[in-house]
Picture: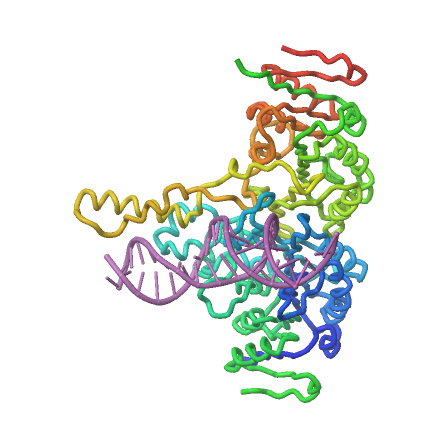
Length: 288
Length: 288
DNA sequence: GTTCCGCATGAATCGATAG
DNA sequence: ACTATCGATTCATGCGGAA
């Protein structure tokens, strides 16, 4: 028999809901908050000039709940304002360091299929930042779990074994990671670099999560073990929680939008799910 | 007969040498300055904590000499200091904006074949920043010159189509599929995005400046015309000048290291070269 | 059953038009 | 003058339907 994996979801403002979590309890925070001036319909649209002051109280709570050995991965990208890149992400990094965060690394997410567009002074924006923060210089990291196939596969081996559709999403050394890594374990594996090549999930998949599953999956494999606790304070459609379940990590999701909360509740009903509605935080109910 | 293309090189500290150039005279500045705490032997190793104050007087001169329609491309990447990414690049961007620079865009240079390496808490660093600054929201940009072949999706599909086309011509008569090839004619080129996939130059050159020729070439095609003036205030081994010559752009290179100056002088002797040694700025000599 | 094609659509950006 | 909304632009991808 296997140990039960918990998934807790909270409906509410994460700045407040996070206060209900104990300190030093989370192994990995991976999230994609609403970007400045984005998603106005659902999140109210935080202005880029007020973004830092909006986020800092949240990052302070995240600092509190994260274990000393844990990691915080923040997916974010500044938009163009008046023909110029906004600087709020950089200001955020500088201010978070004053809170005690160590800015350990910046991964690049290269979006292979991003939104089309061509403008007089600009090409398509095809990448986003994946900022890695830590509380200490020493943190848990299991590099061998995200190793990728070596280079010459593209020439001969994979063509025989895979259809063209599969080839697109697979990985190369120095260029990220892929779905079918398990097929290649044990042979010709190399460590990846800090550039991840992933397609945004789009098109006819039902949940329009801009966050591809491979993204939280990669960081969960890299920074956590089974039964560790993963937190997403802006869970949105719940991609992080779905992946955590599949990888047998405990997880906590928070979102202020009732529609997302209901959607995730429905989606996760078959698995172990703990619901935490506002004003009922101390009466958790196990559904299913 | 063709108009002569000039290449001027200066030996000296670019902060001083730049003062000799007239204002609003340069169409493109593309350079890769010594990174903080790097190249200690040749450049004296600017500390990461003093990097911003060291660079700001230079960027002020660059602002002066750049045409209002010109562009400044800065190749830079912060290094790891004490287990953490240094923030001097971000501080530099913020300070340069106070000088009047517009931070128009950040391109990512993905180094496909970077040095192998693995650290306990870190993967290989496989990307660098290419920061684009401008003096005005309107600047010269010729996007069609850097169009790239469409993705492997279209490529493979076109290949398959052409193969079936041949098959059909030999074995079949009449209508059928394959007629939509016309949809793809003229559509085999697409505009690039802001992620550049280039290999570092691993060649046999003595110096360690891993600036591949494709990098300045791409930006010169994109931001300048023939006979425009390109400036590299940290020319190093002169990659930028070599490319400028090949693309028939006038160019100016500056470097404080005599060895680099001599190397570039020797390298460029066959082309039109103007040497400007220190204290001889008003006596330019045409070599060859 | 394959292979091939049409089509919708996604953390976008600019410039013009409207209030 | 200053914001708010809207249309045009344009590429990679997966799925459904057709050959």
